[in-house]
View 1: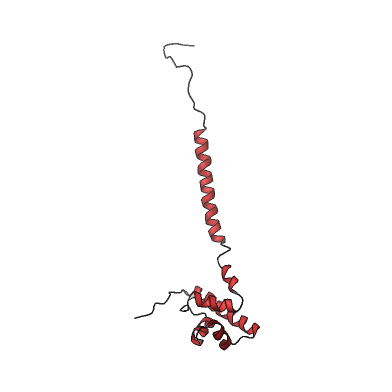
View 2 (view 1 turned 180 degrees about the vertical axis):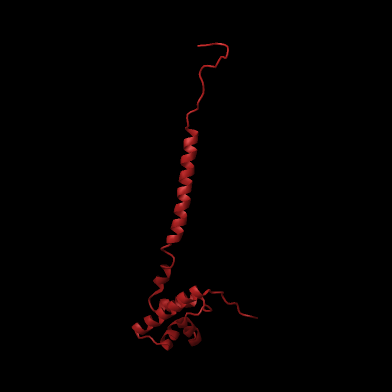
Length: 125
């Protein structure tokens, strides 16, 4: 049985590497060794080393276990909370629908032009 691996683009690998470095720094600040963290989380040393390297092969659940042991699990909840691009897309759609409603409202309330008296070609003024 072959193991599946996530396809991670270079830009995203950089983000995972940064996460691993941040975890390593948090461990150092707290003076927690890899052995101690392994005992706290129940993760094997190779898995823990992969997390510190920012490997994509490690599940997000394992990253969360480490973050939780370091008191940083709430940081994970902040990921994607400030979705500026998503808000811009939503605002564009809201503006489009607002304009469509205005156009429909103007079309329905436009005055109907009609002549109240028929034109008689035979009569002259």
